[in-house]
Amino acid sequence: MRSGVDKMNLNRRETVIPFIPGDGVGPEIMAATKKVIDHAVARSHSGAVVLRWEELLAGSAAHEAVGEWLPKDTLDTILARGVALKGPLMTPVGGGIRSLNVAIRQALDLYASVRPVRYFEGVPSPVKHPEKMNIVIFRENTEDVYKGVEWRSGSKEVIELLAFLKSRMGVDISADSGIGIKPISRTASKRLIRAAVNHAVKKDLKTVTLVHKGNIMKFTEGAFRDWGYELAKEEFNDLVVTEEQIRTSGESPDGKVLMNDRIADNMFQQILTRPDEYSVLATPNLNGDYLADACAAQIGGLGLAPGANIGENAAVFEAVHGTAPKYAGKDVANPSSLILSGAMMLEHIGLDSSAALVVKSLERVLADGVMTQDLARMKDEKGVGTSAFADAVIAAMG
Ligand code: NAP
Image (cartoon, rainbow, N blue to C red):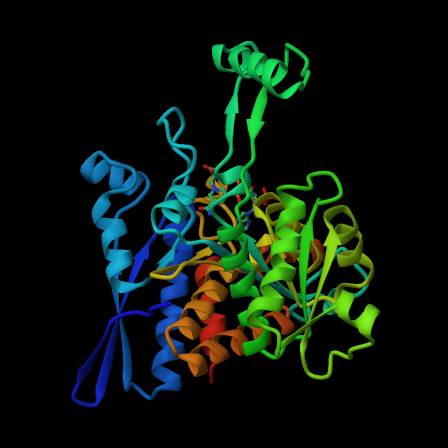
């Protein structure tokens, strides 16, 4: 995976970071995030590293400027730089586009959606022990329902498919059904699970759990699980031990990553009852979509959950929430999700100390009870605005 383009300029290193402000609250949370990140980089590198922000067009801004929602130039620049920070983009209604966010992931083959979910002290939560949640979700980003094909009930395609299924496969499906196809491949499953295991090894995490619905969908979800175990054996024999190996041969994890699997419905129970027994979840697309939000709810909501979409040639870091149009232009949106995504980006391009400073300062501010309205209202408080929150994070850097 490549990082941003660096230029040596005597003793100062300039790193170019493309960014998409986004729609709705996007420009406000992006401005707050850039300010926090610039400050952290300046502070942790004493001015020796400088970020040069390069604005890219996408969404409404692009449509107004060049009549396109997602210009090719934007995608080319992200590929050339290898990295980008992105605000939320609205889905154009009636534009024939399913989602601009999904379009970016697919165009750049950003196959791993990475969502770390951890608790920040002081944040109101709906559960008794939110501090037990510290899980990174690796969700497959290109297949399953993202690549799914659907046909409407009664359409020509469905009539033809039903006839084919009945005559050639002996499968009888009710004539008034809509039909969807959900593909899950060996190649895409393995590369996603490989990324999850590599992350666990690099970060010294205890477990990688394959989450699937293989008891019902044996050749898609069940195959995802089987290919995960196959990968562990083929490529990580020295580093990974499976639950099965422990059960049958009495092998012990002994510093190795434990690979296990859980059926999706059980996993939803586990994240509530025993979240501390899990560190990395590797999931097909749809399971990961549900799980990531369910995990985020336990630590105070989507406002605190960062996200990255990572491929071999580029990585796009983004807030996981949408454009929150009702808050646009009011300086009230929570910028934390984008700030934390920015911290993930800093780590990705090798600025680990800056990333750590951002996270530590955010921790400090939240622990002091400084919060935007979405969190403050759970404590019957009013909260601070987007820019005041960013200023508090900067002040916490010392
Ligand atoms: P949303 O924009 O995430 O907003 C839903 C609700 O979440 C808001 O009404 C607000 O809740 C809360 N919220 C979200 N972000 C917040 C923030 N930064 N600070 C405080 N509260 C926040 O979801 P949506 O209304 O379903 O979608 C709106 C548009 O965003 C759609 O066009 C959708 O396609 C797009 N979208 C984009 C992305 C992306 O770019 N990755 C992701 C999801 C959706 P309360 O009303 O309870 O205060």
